[in-house]
Length: 127
Image (cartoon, rainbow, N blue to C red; front, side, top):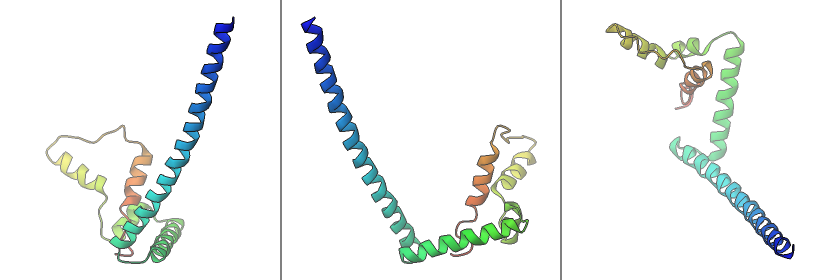
């Protein structure tokens, strides 16, 4: 039985070593993800020609304004219409059905259409 006990001990040591590596790699991954978030934030601030704190304020105020408008009963489509944008789904439906071919995908989730319509608002209030 000594052979199996020795083999078992070796496997336990390998497992412990892997667990330490996993913990170390996980910590490194978290650090890199945090750096990526910050670099992405700085890139957005640069793109909008503002300071990172100003970007935070802009995003926060746009979000609050959208929430107030939605709370007042306006839908995302109503809001897009107010700013003169057509919903991307409306454009594709018009052109797809114009030639008699219905290319709409009935399997789309409502979450997909919600995120697509809210994505159209970015940058509308603050260029």
